[in-house]
Length: 139
Image (cartoon, rainbow, N blue to C red; front, side):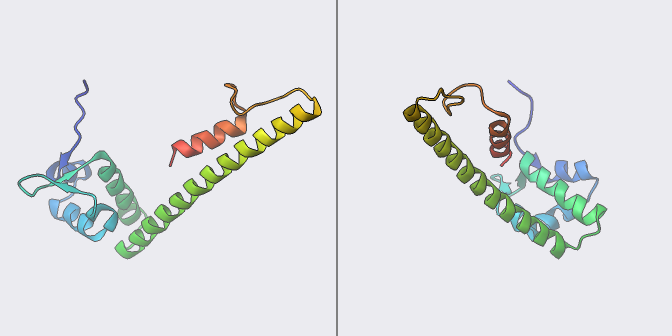
Protein backbone atom coordinates (compact mmCIF):
# COMPACT_ATOMS: atom_id res chain seq x y z
CA UNK A 1 0.00 0.00 0.00
CA UNK A 2 1.39 3.43 -0.87
CA UNK A 3 1.50 6.45 1.37
CA UNK A 4 0.72 8.79 -1.51
CA UNK A 5 -2.21 11.10 -0.98
CA UNK A 6 -5.08 11.22 -3.42
CA UNK A 7 -6.25 14.70 -2.45
CA UNK A 8 -4.48 17.81 -1.21
CA UNK A 9 -5.99 20.76 0.61
CA UNK A 10 -5.76 24.26 -0.78
CA UNK A 11 -3.24 25.08 1.98
CA UNK A 12 -0.98 22.20 0.90
CA UNK A 13 -1.20 23.28 -2.73
CA UNK A 14 -0.46 26.90 -1.85
CA UNK A 15 2.58 25.78 0.14
CA UNK A 16 3.85 23.74 -2.82
CA UNK A 17 3.96 26.90 -4.92
CA UNK A 18 4.80 29.32 -2.09
CA UNK A 19 1.58 31.20 -2.86
CA UNK A 20 -1.18 32.66 -0.78
CA UNK A 21 -4.31 30.54 -0.69
CA UNK A 22 -6.13 33.40 -2.42
CA UNK A 23 -3.96 33.03 -5.55
CA UNK A 24 -4.70 29.28 -5.80
CA UNK A 25 -8.40 29.98 -5.27
CA UNK A 26 -8.34 32.77 -7.88
CA UNK A 27 -6.63 30.58 -10.48
CA UNK A 28 -9.01 27.72 -9.75
CA UNK A 29 -12.02 29.98 -10.23
CA UNK A 30 -10.65 31.55 -13.43
CA UNK A 31 -9.54 28.46 -15.33
CA UNK A 32 -12.43 26.28 -16.50
CA UNK A 33 -10.13 23.26 -16.72
CA UNK A 34 -9.74 23.49 -12.93
CA UNK A 35 -13.00 25.08 -11.85
CA UNK A 36 -15.09 22.19 -13.14
CA UNK A 37 -12.75 19.49 -11.81
CA UNK A 38 -11.67 20.46 -8.30
CA UNK A 39 -13.67 18.49 -5.75
CA UNK A 40 -14.89 19.71 -2.40
CA UNK A 41 -15.03 17.76 0.82
CA UNK A 42 -18.05 17.63 3.11
CA UNK A 43 -16.98 20.85 4.75
CA UNK A 44 -16.87 22.62 1.38
CA UNK A 45 -13.07 22.84 1.27
CA UNK A 46 -11.41 22.46 -2.12
CA UNK A 47 -9.52 19.22 -2.60
CA UNK A 48 -6.92 18.97 -5.37
CA UNK A 49 -5.69 15.83 -7.12
CA UNK A 50 -2.21 15.38 -8.57
CA UNK A 51 -3.68 16.09 -12.01
CA UNK A 52 -5.12 19.39 -10.69
CA UNK A 53 -1.71 20.26 -9.27
CA UNK A 54 -0.06 19.50 -12.65
CA UNK A 55 -2.57 21.87 -14.25
CA UNK A 56 -1.62 24.55 -11.71
CA UNK A 57 2.06 23.96 -12.53
CA UNK A 58 1.34 24.64 -16.19
CA UNK A 59 -0.58 27.79 -15.29
CA UNK A 60 2.30 28.85 -13.03
CA UNK A 61 4.81 28.38 -15.86
CA UNK A 62 2.66 30.30 -18.31
CA UNK A 63 1.73 33.20 -16.04
CA UNK A 64 4.66 33.56 -13.65
CA UNK A 65 7.59 32.38 -15.78
CA UNK A 66 6.57 33.16 -19.37
CA UNK A 67 4.59 36.32 -18.63
CA UNK A 68 1.24 35.24 -20.11
CA UNK A 69 -1.88 37.09 -19.04
CA UNK A 70 -4.59 34.95 -17.44
CA UNK A 71 -6.64 35.32 -20.62
CA UNK A 72 -3.68 34.24 -22.75
CA UNK A 73 -2.96 31.26 -20.49
CA UNK A 74 -6.63 30.19 -20.65
CA UNK A 75 -6.57 30.41 -24.44
CA UNK A 76 -3.32 28.43 -24.59
CA UNK A 77 -4.72 25.66 -22.39
CA UNK A 78 -8.01 25.47 -24.29
CA UNK A 79 -6.17 25.22 -27.62
CA UNK A 80 -3.78 22.61 -26.22
CA UNK A 81 -6.67 20.42 -25.02
CA UNK A 82 -8.38 20.73 -28.42
CA UNK A 83 -5.20 19.64 -30.19
CA UNK A 84 -4.74 16.69 -27.82
CA UNK A 85 -8.29 15.47 -28.47
CA UNK A 86 -7.80 15.75 -32.23
CA UNK A 87 -4.40 14.02 -32.06
CA UNK A 88 -5.90 11.13 -30.11
CA UNK A 89 -8.65 10.65 -32.68
CA UNK A 90 -6.11 10.86 -35.50
CA UNK A 91 -3.81 8.26 -33.90
CA UNK A 92 -6.75 5.91 -33.34
CA UNK A 93 -7.86 6.27 -36.97
CA UNK A 94 -4.33 5.69 -38.24
CA UNK A 95 -3.95 2.57 -36.10
CA UNK A 96 -7.21 1.15 -37.44
CA UNK A 97 -6.21 1.96 -41.01
CA UNK A 98 -2.77 0.40 -40.54
CA UNK A 99 -4.28 -2.82 -39.15
CA UNK A 100 -6.70 -2.98 -42.08
CA UNK A 101 -3.90 -2.48 -44.61
CA UNK A 102 -1.68 -5.10 -42.96
CA UNK A 103 -4.54 -7.59 -42.94
CA UNK A 104 -5.30 -6.80 -46.59
CA UNK A 105 -1.64 -7.20 -47.55
CA UNK A 106 -1.47 -10.53 -45.70
CA UNK A 107 -4.58 -11.76 -47.51
CA UNK A 108 -3.19 -10.70 -50.90
CA UNK A 109 0.20 -12.27 -50.15
CA UNK A 110 -1.50 -15.49 -49.09
CA UNK A 111 -3.60 -15.54 -52.26
CA UNK A 112 -0.48 -14.93 -54.38
CA UNK A 113 1.40 -17.67 -52.53
CA UNK A 114 3.99 -15.32 -51.00
CA UNK A 115 5.24 -15.86 -47.43
CA UNK A 116 4.00 -13.42 -44.80
CA UNK A 117 6.50 -10.93 -43.40
CA UNK A 118 4.37 -9.41 -40.67
CA UNK A 119 0.92 -10.11 -39.31
CA UNK A 120 -0.75 -7.59 -37.02
CA UNK A 121 -1.42 -10.42 -34.56
CA UNK A 122 2.27 -11.30 -34.17
CA UNK A 123 3.98 -10.34 -30.93
CA UNK A 124 6.99 -8.61 -32.46
CA UNK A 125 5.89 -5.18 -33.57
CA UNK A 126 7.83 -2.91 -35.94
CA UNK A 127 9.28 0.39 -34.74
CA UNK A 128 6.52 2.54 -36.27
CA UNK A 129 3.87 0.44 -34.47
CA UNK A 130 5.72 1.02 -31.20
CA UNK A 131 5.73 4.75 -31.90
CA UNK A 132 1.98 4.80 -32.55
CA UNK A 133 1.32 2.69 -29.43
CA UNK A 134 3.38 5.08 -27.30
CA UNK A 135 1.53 8.05 -28.80
CA UNK A 136 -1.79 6.48 -27.78
CA UNK A 137 -0.51 5.97 -24.23
CA UNK A 138 0.40 9.65 -23.96
CA UNK A 139 -3.15 10.82 -24.62
